[in-house]
Image (cartoon, rainbow, N blue to C red; front, side):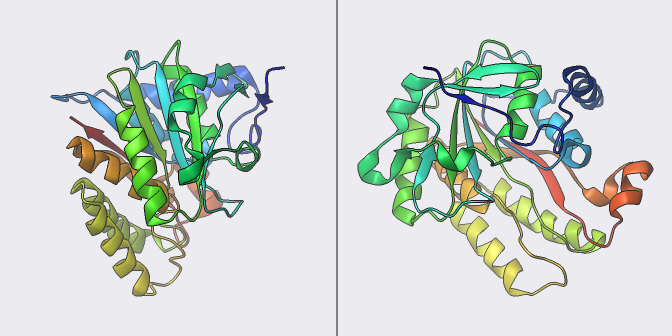
Length: 285
C-alpha cells in the first residue's frame, strides 16, 4: 500500500484550488528572470512562508532551475513543530498537493538513511510541517519527471551534521539538487530586518559554515528589539554550507526582500513594524 502524504497547509500557506494556485505561481515566475551562471547549480536556498509573503522571492530561486534536467531533489528543512535529535527522512510513498502527486525517490532515500548515525526513516515529523511542502508546489511548476527525498532536522548534533552533509554530498550528482528551506529574520522592524538579513546573507555567501554560525550567534546576542530568530532554517543552512564546503561551491544571492516590501494591498495587513526576511541564494560549482 502506497503511503500518501496529504497537504497540511493547502488553503492557508497557499491556495487549495488548483487553478488559483497555478495562476498565482505563474504570476510570480513571470516577474523573474534567469541569471547568467558559469557553472551548475547544486544547492538552492529558498523561503517557505505563505506564498503571499515569500512567494515572489521563492520564485526567483526556482526560476533558476526551470526546465533543467534535475530528476532527484533532496529537500532539507528544520522542523517548526516537533523536537528530535535525529534526521527524519521521508523514505517512501508520495506527496500530494493541489497540483498532483510527487513520488519519493526510495532508492536515493535508502542511500541517505543510516540508522547508526541517527539518519532515520521517520515520516511522523513531516505530517504537519509546512516548510518542505511549500517548496514542492514550486518544483511542480518548474520541473517535470522528478522525485523527492524530504529530510527534516531539529536539534542535530555536530556529528549528525557531519554525517548527513557527507551523505548528501556523496549523492549530489548532475541530476540531483539540494533545496534548503529557510526564512531569515523574524519580527524585527523593517529597517533592522534589512540590516540583520544583509549580514546573514553575506555570511552564507562566504560558503563558510563556521562564519555563518558565528554571525548568527553575534546577531542573536545583540538582543535587537523584536528579533526572535535570525534564520528559522539555521540547522538546515549549517548542513548545506558543510555540503558546499566539501564540494567547493561558490555562492550567489539571487533575490532578497522582507514582508515589509509587499505590494500595498498585502502590506496593509502586515505592516512594517514586525517583518520576516526572505532570500533566494544558490550554491554552484
